Length: 73
Image (cartoon, rainbow, N blue to C red; front, side, top):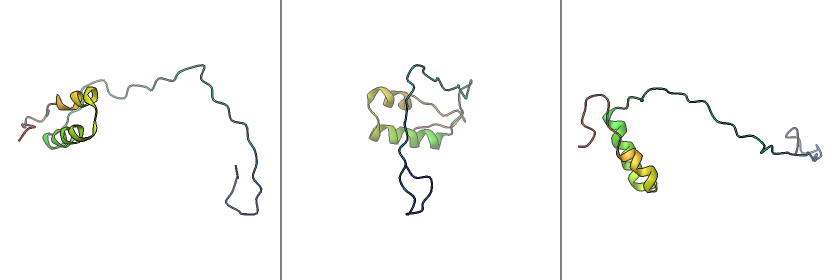
């Protein structure tokens, strides 16, 4: 690695270690359901249809708008 962008600086070898002895679980950021508008739900469903495999796609296709609007036009 280099510590700066100067061309004259020599490369330095460093030892890298990966600690796999413990797993870090990220903290849950939301406790309640997140409110999404109908337009956002429509966009998510369209992207899910095109880009996601079946198990993940099903989650997005079951989303319902929380603002009282109909999500499917």
